[in-house]
Image (cartoon, rainbow, N blue to C red; front, top):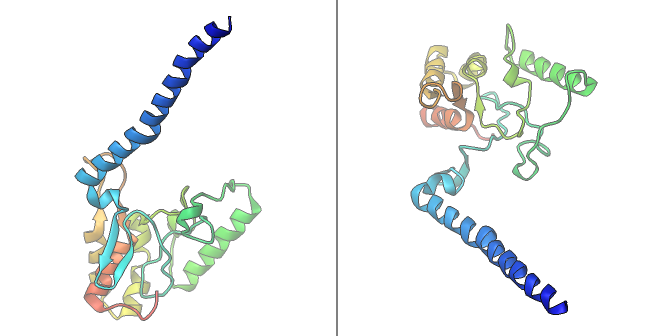
Length: 197
């Protein structure tokens, strides 16, 4: 009886160990190696590097607060854009905290000179809190402020937004969007960086 249990237990233990090594070791390493070989930029975080070093990632939003830069959408990740604490706020439409925060964000946009309807992505955080993109409408709504702060013509800044707008993949997967970091880097290349971000 005891030897029957042991003989039945041995294959189960061996199979569990083999599958653990395969699924927790060999397979992830093979997929990571394939990704680094075929998509090295993406597999290493889609980092954007200039002569000073890493300035950000195409995939993770960051805070831009000066008038010279396009602002990102609000973030609920940690203290804002914290990749180690990626999450939304989980506040629902009846939440008083959410309503107050949105009112504050609208007041901020108004104080920056924004008129008309404020695009939703300028006052609401994404589900991850790390979204690096804005809708074209949200970027275009900031053109007057950025142009004024940089001493550029609004038409020139608007053209940079239109030029930086990425369209749906294959024409139907996703939506039009503008990467805020890439747009701000194009502005710096044209007019020079601000002293601080």
